[in-house]
Image 1 (cartoon, rainbow, N blue to C red):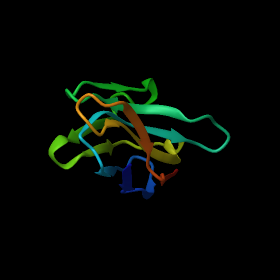
Image 2: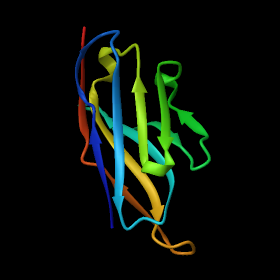
Image 3: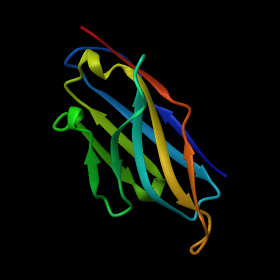
Image 4: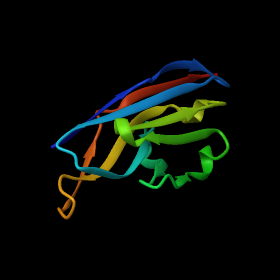
Length: 121
């Protein structure tokens, strides 16, 4: 099993920045896609950004131009740089990773515990 450990959440003023990180560990041969999701109070969980093993990124329309996702394959880490934060970005942010334990093995998916991001006006 693989585990994801998230960090970097906190309380910031509108217009500020935060940098979230997620490090994967455990029985991992290769991590495929990694992404960040968020759930705001009263709303469904939504995809924020995802990045493939090759570095191609996709973003939710609401964060385009403000957030940037990146990954360090050597460290099995994914980063979400959040700039120009808005109160609407307040949510619990979750890291997700698709991975496999063998080259030709089945794929697995695992989630981090979540980290709170609060943006005040």
